[in-house]
Image 1 (tube, rainbow, N blue to C red):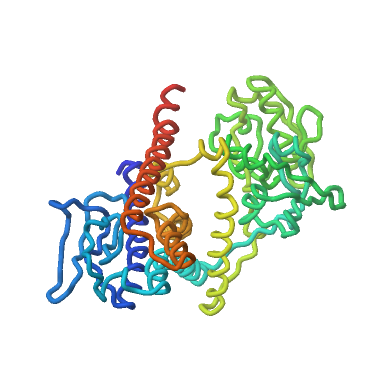
Image 2 (cartoon, helix red, strand yellow):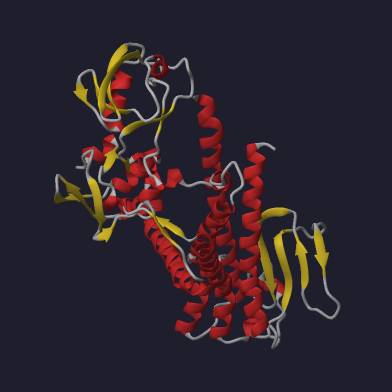
Length: 447
């Protein structure tokens, strides 16, 4: 199966779950407050065609699956939305209609989808914590510190710094990228002393302009210990190096860690170099020719081993607060990052269905699938609560205005707002998917 198709199927599966749960939220609260639901659909259909239509005997609701996998809908009687215009509503208000209910029932019906997506994310995180537990890497425990990118060094970091905290929160591998992206100050341990580094306001724009910068910003510093010799014809194998050898110098210069050794490999690509390394307690020397691609044909021990990680197992009751906390942290960070969307770099980094699908792995992993699904659930909840007409947040905004002015806004005005909001959403979808076409098709083709 093509990797693209495999990723697309994972994306559609996750999207189906999220849409169903979201629309179920509207449906459940409508039924709780005895509001008639005319249709409940996963994906969009047309008047003449749907993959499935089903109306149980004695039910007011038609259930179905559409053929356009871009969303879903819950058609609620008496509500001006994407399924009903003002002209579709009768002149007399019926007791089973949305418009016949008070402010609180209408709010819960509109907010139900967002609420369900937040609850779903927390449930997924709870189940993940209960089933898999969690591995925590506290960066302040890495005795060799971190290797930092050129950009990181330009703002004050130095190779070997132990990342201690960001905005007074202890640095962990799972949170430090978000913390750096949104933080104001970092503290590192350098030569036994804590040093404060101010993070520039432009750091978010830099990461959005070149997203590799965030991934490369800092990585655990590791000694160059040979874990394997993939080929007998490699320069290292020909020079007699063995598994377990630990490189400590290049051309007479001390070089123990990867960030110290790799520049020499790049500088002397295609030329001969001298390596100093320890084999047990013995210091040895070997001369070899570096490959043209700046490698010497060795596999290295991983930077992070099980000994560096703290594994936490949770009982089901312990997993509940851990999962809720993770869901809250995800939503909190997503909201904080949203301000970057309004920058030039943020707008250019927005992605559509292609970007979302590309996040999924090339091989199946339940842990990764549920983790991405939970993240998308949080994102869907936040995007739907934005006060844009046509989205749940837009409906809630209208309800809030009606509550303040103590009279209903006319259905015609709601119609106009719906059209404006629909236009905004369509324009945004066109823009983000055009970004995908540029990033994944046009830009690679142009080289």
